[in-house]
Length: 102
Image 1: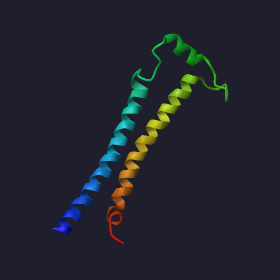
Image 2: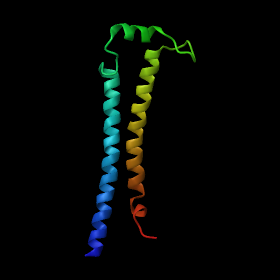
Image 3: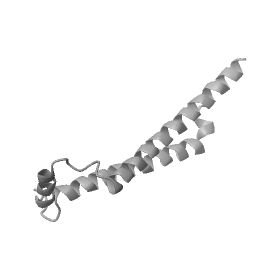
Image 4: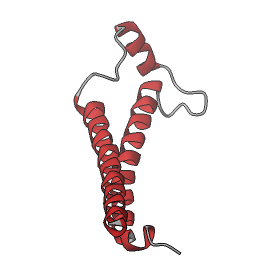
């Protein structure tokens, strides 16, 4: 009976780790979709949106605040998109050694 409980807890923890990785990847994909195909991350005030597009950053005059905000959203969505599968793959490859007793 104890062996069954140990196996059950190991399987449950593996499922929860993989589920967590899938949720992170799903939110990364959703964030990426909303960044490119919606207006969810744009300001409601049109004057502010125009101003953000026209004003350059202090660090460089090559880009505007609007482009910097877009880059921020894209980089963070890509981070979540890569973190989820990397977590799942690394856990799956090491699933036998993660929960062994030493």
